[in-house]
Structures are given as C-alpha cells and as structure tokens.
Length: 72
Image (cartoon, rainbow, N blue to C red; front, side, top):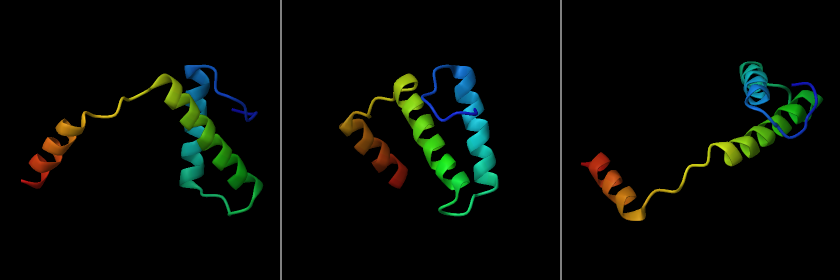
C-alpha cells in the first residue's frame, strides 16, 4: 500500500496488514515519518474492519454467564 487512503478492497486490506505487521516487527522511532505512517495505517485498517467485519456486542446476560463460567 503506497498511498494512505481508505482501503477499498480485500486485496489492499491484506497489503495494509502486511505493512503493519512489518512495522510491528521493526517499530519506528516515535515522531518519525514511519511512525506517522504506521499510526495512520492502523486507523485505516480499523476503519476497514469496522465496515467489513462488524461484530455485534454480546448479550449482557450471556457475557456475565460466560465470565462466571471462566471464574468457576
């Protein structure tokens, strides 16, 4: 992904994830151009995921039951 712009396709989403993964492996210096690009890239990825991979919040009662089960 060369330009920072909204992610229109699954293919470009995958490319953005790959680039972000590289930044995670080689974290840029805070305040640098690469750090800015990383931050913007993460925002674009989050926006794409919110639009295409929406996950509804859990039912509150089921969430409480699940947590109680986890805690024994």
